[in-house]
Length: 442
Image 1 (cartoon, rainbow, N blue to C red):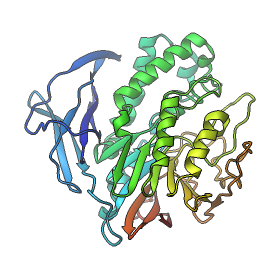
Image 2: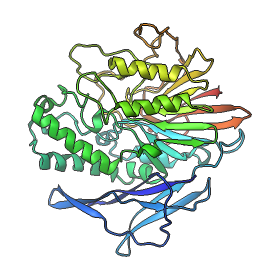
Image 3: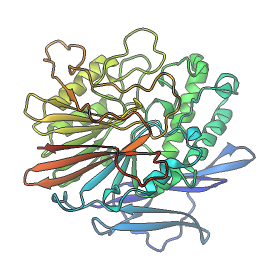
Image 4: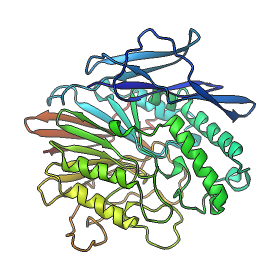
């Protein structure tokens, strides 16, 4: 089933950002004017921001594998435009245009004044343009360290005003990031800077979060704006299939607890377990953090707890991805470098971890250092579980701003995956992939 929803992400003083995303099919809305929904004013300087809640504009009866363009109209006026390419009905054969996902994370708008992320995206060759984009964390930095995070007002309206300003500056950048968002379907998975560093735990990079009342308000406001701009995926839409390839989009931050009890709800983890155990071909699992990682440890954390620090849930995640009969590709970001690592499993399948980060580096300190995957998975032993041994493709070593395309095409019962890393800064030269990696999956 081809299903697309055009979501009005936000209407601000600078315009409307229309963000297309995957959704369930519904009644056709061809030729209909955008109608007003439940509008909630939020302060934004001397003006106001309005967003439509619980009202999506659904377009049905689309042909698989074709591009479509949409206009968002209000009172007869075109407020924004967006485009999507519908999902192919089947996974294409090798030699045909493959099914392609764009993977990116960590967009620091303040370091992309020229809009180079959007420019690089617009220069992608036609055969590399994605069917869907997966932005897997830190789509904004609501906690950029500076005077405002130390001494700003922390009542809910002031936090809302500040965070909306951050979103509007980043997401309405044109030419720039808005080009990437409006061209093609988007799937979002959040990470800590969509709230604050190491959220929901307090962080020295956002000192006010050590005040419980401030942290509670900050989390509530940031979560509300995540729902407005990025949208929590409906459980029905977190998994979709392209022929034998199954994609599951998880979020390891939205329902994370303070401390290290849980990085997602039990229900969300059960979804991953059920999805992995029922694969009929290769799977893609989207996560905001790396599974091939060392724990940060139990002491004071300056930066961020990773998935291995949540020992009980991490053990369940490891078990889920190491036992399926088919290979699982983990699409992730967060760590400010590009990497590909592969791990054979006891079933004869593989776990392939693809890391794409950052779109734009937030800050050069600590040093942005490329690292190989740990030599064991899990890196710290879990009683009753044998260690597996990932290997890292050392030639796929990228320590620069970039996004990645991950494409899939079938040949018989096998699927060819091709990973290409595209640099953001080309110094005026034609856009070409900086690195590539290929793997046959079963």
